[in-house]
Length: 455
Image 1 (spheres, rainbow, N blue to C red):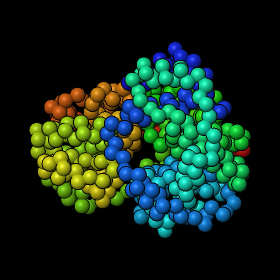
Image 2 (tube, rainbow, N blue to C red):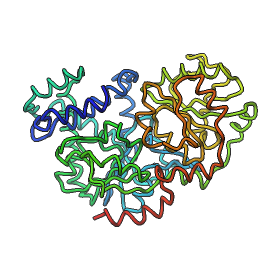
Image 3 (cartoon, rainbow, N blue to C red):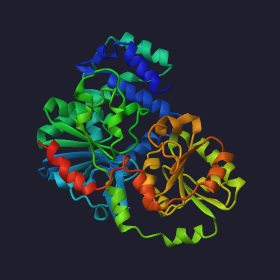
């Protein structure tokens, strides 16, 4: 199951007719299908008790900030925070929110909120405090709507061979919508910013009904292969952002023939964190010392969906040439990777640095289909993409076409050969080659574009 199947469904079936209490159901369910197919087979979910415990601990993060007056709300998550000179910035929203005006960050906890004294954001709260209300509405207070034309949905899911508790997801979105609608009535924001709109349908629906424009801030890959950014039917605009601020120019091309957003409402701005990092970059002495023992250093960015396959590929490659150092960068540092997978000595994990700090110092970067492939080039580091399950070609085949800076390999043998033979270019030239994907001049671009979209 891939995007093509979702596309076929939207072209062949009247899925826009599937409704529940005034909500279109398919825009919600299509995302859950994509999530299930891309992530659920590999993600080990935390226990319910653990989730409740972590939620309780984070509920009162920045609690008193709820009582301020704000012109803008920013729905983001803690994964967006990256460190520069000891301070953690929200790489997607920090400067935009600051430039817009008085803003409240409503941050979802994914890996854990950073201590407030260590972040750049002053007005911030945890979204965790809203979840008990959302659950309360879902469980007890809302009348579960009847799904109209449910037979169409059942037929579609059956043909896609997908098993989804669609009533649960629809009712959760309705419950979130009710809570956010209440929040909007209190704050009356001029505009709302969101990171990853397709996971926040309740927020978008509430904003649409209140007449509040929504601006999405790019957080990852936007391509013609991404289920979250390609729609093939004119669904209600209530489930999509009004504006999209992107890293580069290429994202506009994605929306030539789909209904996600009008191309005229897509604004390239660049990447705040990359520019901050380049401005303040200093090589890490510890990694530099380790690297001296190898002829080439490769930063390898992992992804949950293909991690097992990538690790096996990497181990086989590492054994072929012990003079190549692989710095493995897991999505989450929550496993004893070295002991569990029995890494050879030339595969290491550098847990004191993040992806960006490692990659800017590496000779080459490798991944399957992570956004890091685009970001690495703007750090001046060339790519070797590993085409596991055809994903690298699917996501980047039409985007990263310059073979002088990005190559694609199929096998470990080809991977090792490419590492050894890849002509390393001056990092300034590599950065320049990527300006269509991540435009330079972030601060100036934001200063110019915000007046065009802010009410």
